[in-house]
Image 1 (spheres, rainbow, N blue to C red):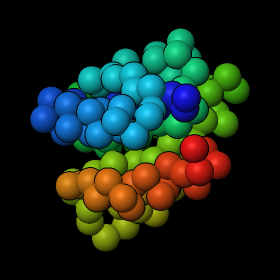
Image 2 (image 1 turned 90 degrees about the vertical axis):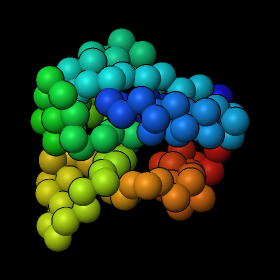
Image 3 (image 1 turned 135 degrees about the horizontal axis):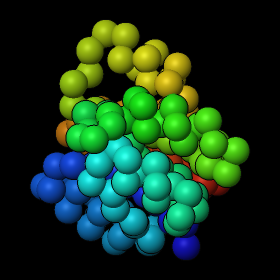
Length: 122
């Protein structure tokens, strides 16, 4: 079973997405701010991280930079999730180290396709 770390501060988004991913057979771990996301990336060794970009404590951009700067976590694929999809955000996310980018509200089928691309279709 693939382990996904969901870094999301919005309770409604977090609950909905974690339930849907769990039903699809993923083991979902949750962090509610950027610093917790960085800490949990190290401690729980997820197979993939879904990173909200607008987070408290440290934002998703900085959390991703820290995860990608750490040799222990740098190989974990990170998919950025944002509701504020503005021109240049995708490029900015990729430059911060995100491996892919998706917008909210989440289109589950599209997101599952992206997750499958990194986890070998599991």
